[in-house]
Length: 196
Image 1 (tube, rainbow, N blue to C red):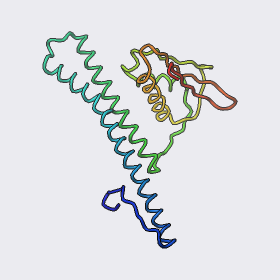
Image 2 (cartoon, rainbow, N blue to C red):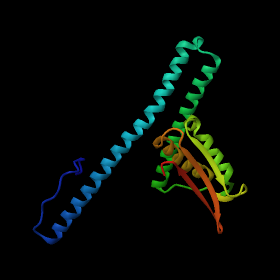
Image 3 (cartoon, rainbow, N blue to C red):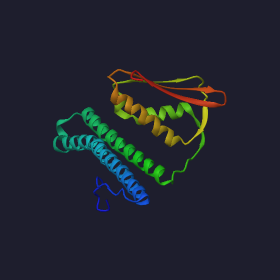
Image 4 (cartoon, helix red, strand yellow):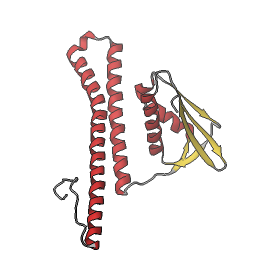
């Protein structure tokens, strides 16, 4: 096991204490093997998630570099916007990875402040960039002046992740709704999509 071969198992069954130690080692090996598999699947998934926007960025940048005079100003702006949106998408992905790391190593610090829910929703929708083009994204607020204490950056990140998943897994023109309402002395944030 120490050399990374996690499918090795102990067969000692003679002495009760040694047998228990053997079972514990086997359990540890199984758990480490599961974690290694999850880590490899995660790395594979992240690699794919990184490759998609990088391919778009390099493709659009290549088109602009090689054919700058062939494009209208409007088309150039569209390509620049696509490059920017993909770069921001990568930035958000890296922020998510750093967020996970901070949670796992216990260095996560919340910055709780009173925030307007409408502002948080608008910022989250804005961060979707071009991904939102083919879906009907809306907000529904019970009261325009709903406020809550929160870490705005983290809540926006959660909402962006939820909406990106909805966009990814629902057909074009699906409805995605962010809504909020007061329940007693708390604010309830709700998210719905046609797939929910």
